[in-house]
Image 1: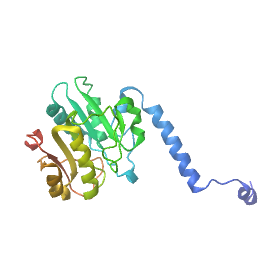
Image 2: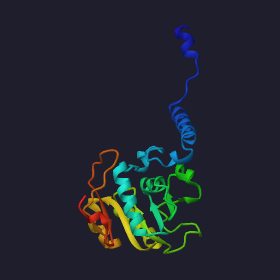
Image 3: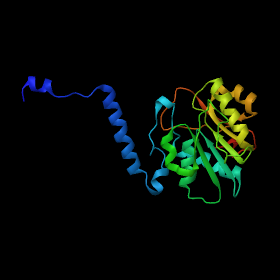
Image 4: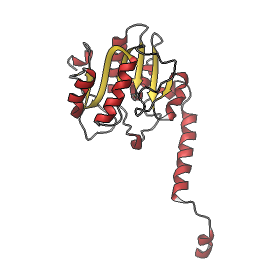
Length: 214
């Protein structure tokens, strides 16, 4: 084929190419998320534009076990912007607790009735089925390290919880977290699948296994 013929070939714009790639990625995701596999951490890829960074398998398991112990048998658990913990909880095949995942990213709607669309900018804009103080523990990981994001997410946490809170956020937010939620930093240091620039920590407002030697 000559160069002139190449020039006559229709070219897709950069925007169209990106949209096409996103479409194919979404289609692949739908085919890859059948059965128990849909609870694997990483089955939904991180979107850095939404400040998504998944926990390592070890951290997700440790936090899931902590949440189960804190909630108790038959407990209700809310995972607010903490999909890795939700996925690990469901991967454990436990049926003696109920759980909801509160997420802005609608890709997590694959979890059907357990998915609640959540925008921290509207912290109390929740469906009627989510009653106030109806969860034994709330585990939350605000997407951004800012006072505004933590303050608004805290409104949601306080609305949902019957008392227990497990907060995962940057070490720089320690003072603000204590002021807003009465939580204290734990000894356990969470890890992510990727190295983050900011030191990350866990905070609780109850006697926690995360303060034991690890």
